[in-house]
Every structure is written in C-alpha cells, then in structure tokens.
Amino acid sequence: MVQIRQAVPDDAKEFLSFLLTLDQETSFMLYEPGERTTGEAELKQKIEKTREHSLLLVAEGGEKIVGFLSASRGNVNRIKHSAYVVVGILNNYRGMGVGGRLFEELDTWAVNHGVSRLELTVMTKNEQAIKLYKKMGYKVEGIKEKSCFVNGEFVDEYYMAKTEFSRENTRKVIKNMVLNHLQVYQRSQHFIWTDKYISKNMLAAHLDLNSDAASRNTTTIKRTIEWIEARIPKGGKILDLGCGPGLYTSLLSKKGYSVTGIDISKSSIAYAQKKAAQENLPIHYFCKDYLNSEIGEGYDAILCIYCDFGALIPSEQEILLKKIYHSLKDGGVFIFDVFKSGLCNNKQEKRDWHYSDGGDFWCGSPHLVLEEEKHFTEHNVWGTRTIIIEENKQPREYITWDHYYSKSDIEILLNKNGLKVISFKDELIAENEFVSNDVMFIEAKK
Image 1 (cartoon, one colour):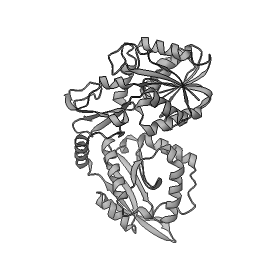
Image 2: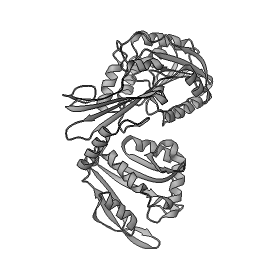
Image 3: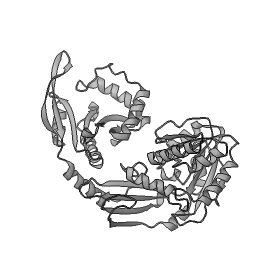
Image 4: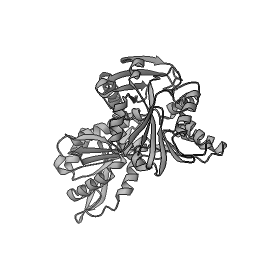
C-alpha cells in the first residue's frame, strides 16, 4: 500500500535516489538524466526549509519513495495566496490513484493555510498528466510556447491553475473533521507552539509562575533545578530541549553551566534571548524543531522537561532518542519527566463544542470551538483534538498527545536506544490544579 505523508529532512538520501530515477524514466520533468547536481546535504536543508512555509509530500511504497508533490508558496505579500505545484511519480506506480491522493492532500493543505490559487505548468504532450490535472479541477490558462527543448525539438507547455476549490474543500474539511473521530497518533497541520496568536498566549502561560499551565510553578522549578544540579558536573555543558522562555536555562546558566536552549516557538525564544541579554547570560538559544534539526554534540546533560517527551508519538520518540544518544558525551545523562497512570484520573473522554466571542486562548475573533478528548488504552496515550472555525476562514485543527508510563516502560524504551536508567524521582511536583501531579523524573546515562 502506498502511504502519502509530508517529507522530513531524514528523507533526503532516499528522495535524491528517487529523483535520479525519475530523471531516467521520463522526459516530462525539468532535468535530463545526469544533469541534477543537488547533493544529499543540500536537499536535506531544502526539505527543512520547505516545511516552514510550503509543502513537500512523498508517496511511499515498499519503504521506498515512489512519488512526490511540492507546492512552493509565494514569498511576498501579493502572491502569498498562491503556490506553484510540481509532481512526479515513478512509472510502476502510475495509474494507481497515487497522483489523485497527492492532489487531495494538497487541497487540504491549501485550505488549511489560506492558499487560494494553485498553479503549474505541463508539457502539452503529457496527456496522462493533463487528464489528471483537469480531473482535480485545474484549468488551462494559456500556452508557454517553446518552453522546453526535449530530444532535439522545442516543446510547448500549458499554464494550468485551480482557484475555485476553497468553498467546496472547506465544507469537505469541516465535515471530515467533525464526522471522523481522532485516530491514534494522528497529526495536525497546525501546532499550538507555532501559531502566531496561540504562541503568545502560551508565552503568557509560561511566565505565570503561580500556574502549571505551560511551565511548572516556582516551587517545582526550584526543586527540579536542585535535583538536576546534583546530577551534572559543575560547569557542565547542558542542552534544554523545548526550553520555552528559558525558565530553567537561565537558572542553570547563573549556576555556572554552559547552556543551550532549543524551542520551536518564535515567541518563547525571542523572550528568552531578550531576557538573557538583559541579565548578561551567555546562553545560546535556537528557534527550530529539534526532531528535524541538528542539536549539537558533546553534552554532559540533555533535558526535556514538562512531559514533552510523552507529547511525541512513538516514531518521533525514536528519532529523538537516537539524536540524544549521538549528542551526549560518554557517561552523559538524559533527564526528563513523564506522566504516570494517575493522568487518567484527571482526564475524561468527550466530544463537545462551544461558541466564543473571541479573545480566548485559541482565537482573537468570534469562533466555534470543537473539542475531542480520547483515550487509547492499548497505547497508554490520551489525544486532544481542537478545531477552530471562524466565519469566512479556513478551519484550523490542533492535535496534542499525552503518554503515561510505568517505570518498566521507560527502562525498556531507553535500553533499546542505548540509554540506561540511573534513577527515578517521584516527589518533585508541587501541588497544582493543572492536568496531573502524577509525574516521575528520569535520569538515564549513555
């Protein structure tokens, strides 16, 4: 079965091999065989950059990439509503519906990201592709004469575009979101940590030190720092993954540690950098996704606090643990915390909705909030799905996950990835009213 998914930087080697094969198979793409000069490292960077503003889908069959679709969004305000599309599929997988599925995923992405024009060019002799594009709603807008030189002759191309899909696809997206229940480890296009409006509210929650809504309260942070400090050599090199606005990194830096912080939220990193400059703290902050970026090496300790590890789905956890193993010194420690089974006492399955006048956590303008909370007992995980619907705007979906673990679960997972549990700590969390106090901290050594 062919799977459609977004490309990740680790796909670079396989994706390059696919592109070279595609160049050999077809004369309808841009490059001639042997003409492509892009290397694996450069392609990896391009994939990482594409994930920020545009789209790169891959079709995977038999653990190999067999097709792709890219949509490159305009960089300036007047054309940000449009995206240029390129698609290619290996010969053995054409006529199997792969192209249609790629374009369906593209439409969903376009609706979710406010893209109202999709455009492409296609050689006039590529009848199979033209048939697919017309089926997916694209119309010929003009001819690009003598556009390409193929096999000793000039070839014309059609300009094709799709602009009339928003209403139809918006209804489809909303219907699918409402009628289809949350599936285990489903991911959403939108993330609360990168949404401009929500991330500002997240930052405010981080900075409320009387609350555990986004970071821990002052008492718990103090206890945690003292416990961490007893496990890392003085002056050691520390990496804080998901560092937020720097609540832990700043305290550790003041205690003489060499500290680096990584977080995906621009709002949080901007605050952390400003605070470090004000306090003259030599902390290195980076705004990036630590799953798909280099995180450095030679660390005495790597931290991942506030149950962030359990917010990752299993495939992401495997990626992270491999990175952590590579980035720690021999004898270095990974320190993190996770929920225990008591989390289930504080959650309840539901499907509900309510209206908001705006100005709440999710949105500044009037909107509907559709909420789903689901317990996947066989995976020891709770999923939370929130859909925000504003008038005359595309719906936005946010999905988060919370795993809970036993001590043996953690030992098995870490041992499989070259890390050995040194200690567990259960009494660091001060009493609070947010989610669950049933949390354990883990110290694991490389």
